[in-house]
Image (cartoon, rainbow, N blue to C red; front, side, top):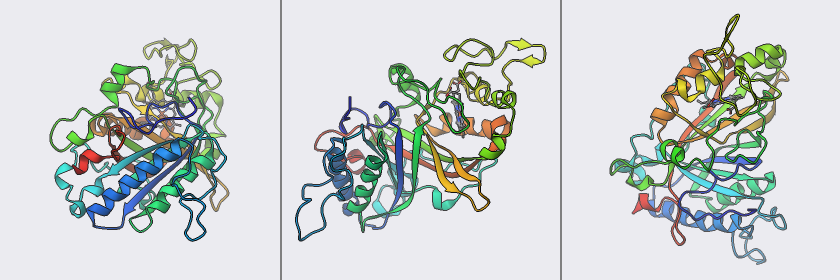
Amino acid sequence: PTTFDLYGEHQSGIVTPVQDRLHFAAFDVLTDDRESLVALLQAWTVAAAEMMAGRPAGPDISSYNAPPDDTGEAIGLPSSRLTITFGFGRSLFDDRFGLADRLPEALVELPHFPGDNLDPARSDGDLCVQACADDPQVAVHAVRNLARIGFGTVGVRWSQLGFGKTSTTTRDEQTPRNLMGFKDGTMNLKSDEQSDLDEHVWVEPSDDRDAWLAGGSYLVARRINMTIEIWDRQTLQSQEGDIGRTKAEGAPLSGGTEHDDPDFELAGRDGPLIDPASHVALAHPTANNGVRLLRRGYNFVDGSTEIGRLDAGLFFLAYVTDPRSHYIPMQTQLASKDRLQEYLQHTGSALFAIPGGIAPGEHVGQALFA
Ligand code: HEM
């Protein structure tokens, strides 16, 4: 399809085939008034449905006596498979809105991981909006109009542009590549793996605190900088050893082609063909209690630093059923053992609860405010 529907069992933008471009924004709510927050979520839901259908964000774009209801830069462009996904951060559940007893236990404060160098100005937030589209102008237009609609009620805390998706959720596409030049998303959870999605992505509510999150998920967002110039001076053998896969084909170093299972036992003269400290060995389900993630990240380049290095890396996005089982242990392991870690620095971090699907006539997260 060329257009996706905002309404459905789950929010769009999770198992939806990954689009090429991203504009992700975290917002802080500026008011203490619960009704204003609910009114904003209503207005955002309506505008998101319009924009995803390829229409302007609001009805009135030609009155001379008021600012237009749409900023205009997407007029004439196709919807470009736009999806808009909303999430709620832990800080939304403080005393301001009477939501403290609905804070899901899994919406934790992520611990400090070895090697983290987090910038508070690029972390956390009360609300998030993930806009994905094949055209960056369409994704930016979506975030810009939601921010405009929220003026006075919310303010953008940080935002991130991404290009060149680093994962797929469908099988019919060629696996894209990250900025280290490797195929990324080979073993990603795919949209047709229904029972694995139920087990690893969708929330199974367990009590009154997270009942409102049925059909939802948790989104881990990490801005991961790469020391690209240093990586680019490593031998091909060293790069492949760090990942555990070949660069050209993306095949496991134990042999075969891209989609063959890696064999972590297979040894050559110098030991296992796939280094146990490689990224794939440490991220694979066999090393993580069977855990799988639905990764949906994007490459980013935010210009250059003052010493002329690219400010670039991977904006990691993963949808999981529970970050306590599905992100924290894996990241703890990667941060201390992964050979890749030498070239990485996590510079932003956020965790959001992603409400379930939206029914026509309702607004996103309606069950939380019921
Ligand atoms: C797999 C790169 C960060 C979890 C892979 C693969 C590559 C890669 C090239 C192999 C292809 C594939 O199966 O998709 C990177 C880079 C990262 C990064 C460049 C940082 C800039 C992370 C982080 C996590 C993670 C932070 C989770 C905490 C995984 C998982 C797999 C994977 C679960 C699949 C492993 C498997 O099932 O075999 N990554 N990754 N990655 N990565 Fe990462």
